[in-house]
Structures are given as C-alpha cells and as structure tokens.
Length: 574
Image 1 (cartoon, rainbow, N blue to C red):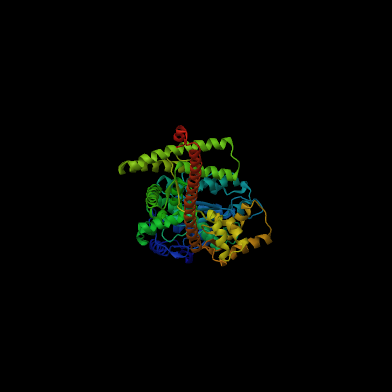
Image 2: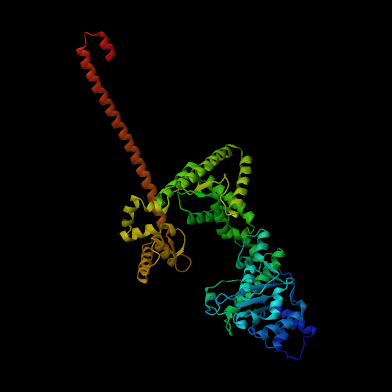
C-alpha cells in the first residue's frame, strides 16, 4: 500500500494498522502463504517508515513480500545505513547474516560477492564485490561499522566461517558473530545444516532448497535472477527465525507433530533401520557396534524428526541394536574371529610387518578381555545387564564423539549371511551367472563393482569407482561410454535397477535375494556332501584297519603253527 502513496504523504495511525494487517496476512516465503508461528518479535513500528524512506531514495526493491532490497552501489549502501541508523529500533539486537560468492568469477576468485542482512520483516543484499571490485579501500564505511559492532549479533549457520571469509576478502573484522548450529548442539539437537534447522525451527512455510544453479549464478550482476534473490534472502531470513525460535524452544508445528501425522509401529521402524544396515554393511563381516549405532542415528531420517535430541535417539538406537542381537538379525562376534578376519584382510592387501603383528596382538588382548566380560554380562541378571548396557552406551557415545576407538568394552557385530563379493567369487556364481544370461565380461564387471551397488549410487560415480578400483586414474571418453554401457546392460538384465533419484542405480533386491538363497542352498548341499564324504572315508579307514588286522592274524596263525612246540612263544603271539 505504501508503494502507491505519494512521497509527501506520511503514514497515519490507521494506515499503519491496515499495513500491519495486510503484511501479516500476506507474508510469503517461497510463494507459499505463511503463518508466523513461533515468533519472538513483532513487526517493528519503524519498518513501514524505513520502507517508505528507502523507496523515496529509489533504492531497488527486488522482492515485495517480505521486502528485499538490492544495494549495488556505494551510494545505495551508505544511504541505506543512514536511514537504518536514524531508526535504532529497526532490529531487535540481532540480525540474520549470510554471504554468497560467485563461483566461476575469473577476476578476484573466492572473494565474497554479497552480504545478506535480515530481520524478520526486511532483507538487504549488499553486493560488496560489485561496489569494491575487490579493493578493500572502497568497502562501504557504514556497512563496515555495522559489522564491527559487537552489540549487534550476526546470526547464521557457520556464520564464523562467513566472517572469516569476509576478513580474508576485504580485511574486514566482524564482531558479534553467532553460529546457531552451536546453540542447537548445546541444547541437544543434532541438526547442523541450515535446511535441517529451518525445518525444525523456521516459520511455517519457509522451505530452503539447495540447488546446483548456485554454481552458475552471478551474484555480482546488476540484474539478479529472481530465483537467486529468493535463495539469498531466504538464508538470511532463516537465520534470524531459527535463532529466535530455538532460544524460545518453539519448534515448527509440522516437525513437532511428525510422529502423530505419520504414525508407524516400532516393528516397522526396526525393519526400516535394518534395511539401512543391509545397504551400508556387507553380510558376514565384522563391524564395530559404535559404527552401526552412529550410522543409524545419522541416517534414519524418521527418528531424526521424531527424536530430534541426539541423546534420546542414541539410547533408542542402542536398544534397537540389542533387539537385533536377540532376534538373530545381528550376531555378536568372538574376539578370535575378529582378529582372524583382520589378519586375513592384511594378508590379502599387503605383507604383514612386525608392527602389524604387534597391533593385532594388542587387539586380540583387548577383544579377549571383552569376550570374558561379555560372558559375565550374559550370565548375570537383567538389572546388571541393563547397568552394563548403560556403561556401554556411554562408552560408545564418548568414543564416536571424540572420533577415537571405543574402550575395551567395544563390541563387534555382523549381519548373518554371506557378502555379495564372497558369493560372486564362488564356483556357485561361476555356474549360475551365465545361466542367467550374463556374459563373461558382465560377470567380471559385476565382481569389480559388487562392493558399491548395495545402495543407490550415481552412474558417473560408479564408473569412477570402477576406474579407481582398477588403479587406472585416467580414462578417455570412449572407455567411459563403454563402462556406462556395461552398467546399462546389467540394468536391462535385471541385475541392477534404477534408483529413486535421477541417474542412480543399485543392486536389484529380487535378483540379490535369489542369489543369496541359491548360495545358501549350495553351501548346505556341499556341507552334506562333505559330511557324507567324511563318513565314507571313515568307513574306508575302518575297513583298512580291519584288513590290516586280518593280515596280522594270518601271520600270527603261521607263527602258531611253526611254534607249536613252544608254549612261551604261543603266549607271546597271543
């Protein structure tokens, strides 16, 4: 409304009330009508007059609701801050803060292009590189004074990194910098990225979507892309929203009620978590329990939403691991087996050295101690087992947070069955795969990529992994196309399938299940054959012994006949 008013007409009380009502009803984020949920500040009374003054000075307004201004010249930047400084209540003591940099700029690469500053109601895009061309002496003085004011907090995700980048670009000191992810961590929330924190604590309707277009955008252009403007301003708006809401402990309604809106049984949740383990860990191989716990905590998105506090989620994951062990989905591995697997792996990769042997011996000692303690826990009552589990919980939590190996009570677990690599390396696969229409080249290629296809992977990444696995770091376009065609051929033969995300593939679950079932049957039949063979060999050995005994008896008989006159000799031979 204020845009259509004459410059000499000022806001009256009634017009201000109408403007506030219209603004609060029409507030838009990402073209979605938004309700201001979980706010800690109201629209300041100075905002309408600030907007009127900015419009009067003809400072470019590049977005209406909420208003976003582009400051592309030093004159615009100085005028903007003169207006803001004349209205001390334009901010509540903190502002959203972010920076952007044009990626492929040839002149002065890696120099900050834009500084975004926002309250809940208004955002400013200062194109500092366009203003300075990389010359720190041309940096707007009033903007510099604002950044140097420690009384005004500049809040954002990884805001200190942005401040450091500004310092390296223009030798500008930024004070009052606050990383909101640190606040989230102190309050027990595991979310770290701005998009995650916005989903939890942003106003309803504000959705941050990262796009690859950022690599091509020119943040120094006079005419900015509307999508670029939305992207840059949303980050700054999100910063202040998340900061205020997380301090007030006011979580987004949709996030807070995710479990009620999307109900699921505990068994269904455990099945989804087990699928994560199957996608990330090979069957039949030992893995540290702490690694399994960490992956489930960080990769099971449902629990990230329903159990946002990391400690709560950690405890539930530990309980789930214990459930998997009790129902046979996971197997606790003995220390000797872990050491044997480690030694076999080292033998295959490189010749062992005295140092490696020493490390293996130390590992064996630690795991032996664990085995003994584990036996005691199993024999003890449930209450003691729970206490021991709590101790293990703390030790595991401490170990992975410090990125150091867990203490002596660390457990090793494995998923029952055989890994895909093991099955494909067997004589069973050599007979089965050709019968399924796979050529020798397909079989060889499948064995090379088997460790990468349990979960979805981009075709390009799979090609690169195959190249690196073959120790061939460089490849020409023709060979790249050949490898890509091999991947597509395996898709056509239903060995691989297309993933949910574009241009990704993974092992077809039906084909893998058939392969695993066939190999289990093959192993069972071989075991029975070996058992029968062992029985036959035992019978043959018995017959040989019997025949040998009969032969000895014949000789004895001959001796008896020849020595009939000697009673002593008879007794001896008997």
